[in-house]
Length: 271
Image (cartoon, rainbow, N blue to C red):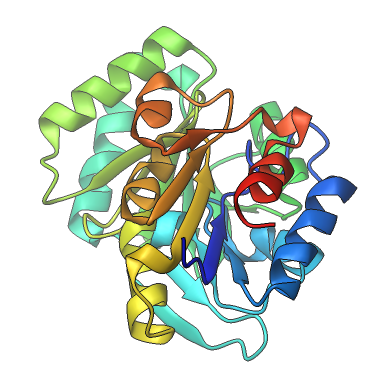
């Protein structure tokens, strides 16, 4: 393999229950970098929430956030790409959630200018904000944000059956040419511009910015929002607790995040 770029997801990949990157993973990533391989992060998280992980692994390339909707270089603060969700589609999605019979179980997050906006602070919001290390902004009407072309809409629901129903209904109501629908966890349903996914973002970084090819990329992820990224990469690794659909398209399956699966994968293939 001629790997020159390593792309890593955060949650469930380099960071687990601790919400930190384990020392062994950091040490292994540094060894990879010492071999001349560039490393960066591609995550569903906000840019500002992902930044500390980018810094903890000493990455020197633009960071990919919001599942690919936002690409920004921490060193220069230059935003290379930002693809927000169409405001009309965003309002239609908000209508759908507000009118849903299970709407009391659904919490909606909207993102604009790398800031989180919510209608109210709930216990779910507090948990999300604490893990993300951000301060949500409360706003009476989320349409105010959506009309400015929100970067992403996230629906949070702790009821698996309801979440499955939401995913199925949205995929039927909103065609793929209008919205990209994915999940980064069992409780998050994420909606962005239809051209947004980690695969397209990594392609942009690899080919437009770095002048490399897909065969030069190794990617590691653990969930459905990593699907396109793993498909694009010349060599792909799924984490041990990834859904079967993700494991099936990967070149190799690593142990879980709690077992330092990323470190084991890097030791096996790049060191």
